[in-house]
Image 1 (cartoon, one colour):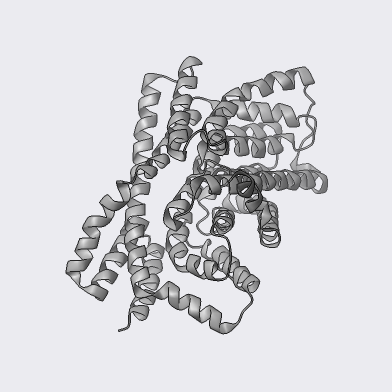
Image 2: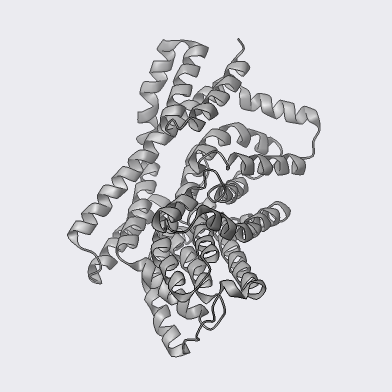
Length: 433
């Protein structure tokens, strides 16, 4: 059996294992180890299995991930999400649909200090959905706004998903953070426009909002000083060249703890729980990364990526059509696979092809995260949907799906904009770096 056939069978076996609900890390490890053994024997496979964990985790740069996670966890437990929601609500007050707009704005702001879609959706879901229910918002709009607003957490830097892509694709974290900022802001703006359109077309979904005096709005906006400080430490310091990504993550994590302590919004027990949660999350991600690299080594050894490049070149398809086909493939894949699985399985296969076609890997990383966001809210996987459903079980899944549909137009429009105007993601990295 040729290496190419073994590689293709390995990819198929991996997808089947994941669809059978085998944990992604275990599935990656099994396929990578058995595939390597099929190519070079069990002795070589066990040598690779023994060296890969140390080679990967000994890297100093990998510590950026748990530090950013700690910053987000502490920020969530110390009540910053509520302050962001109150500030955004005051800012949009007086407009029909103001609370839904505020939810999206608060999700975008919390994404600046969280970096996780699920955490953003879970945090804002606890705050925003009951408030919108109390004021008479339609359940479809309230859940749809939280589910789609939560996806901003993995696009607006510091994004854990962009860090994962940087590790797998061997790209620059600062450039990816810079590339994700403008598309993240644009997507937040498009989602707010969707709420505005819904409030005009379906006024029964959104009650009237009482305008808050500007003096009170300014007072509420001053509550965002914590966010601004953490964003400057975590992202602004990287853009300005003051910190490396790892240094910025460490300083921002310490800043989140210091701010929470000075404002008396966290206790020792909550801090300890935050650290335990960080260790668990980081350990899970490290385990997935280790097995993903084992699978990646196996895949490269089979020459499947190189074979795919040669096959596509042989078809004579224009690069733009190849890219559109890949986007459609990712959207369909997102219906059955979890976001991390999508990235770790496909990047080693498709990135060499895109480089051969002349696409920028930083641009592709941001586009991939945008498409993964769509997967986070599409059935049957749609993890953001089930996070929200767990908090409001009285709302049927059909209502949540119906509420998401209008917001998907914003996500697909951003995909079209990025395909048509790559500078949307590449302009800021070009200016800064």
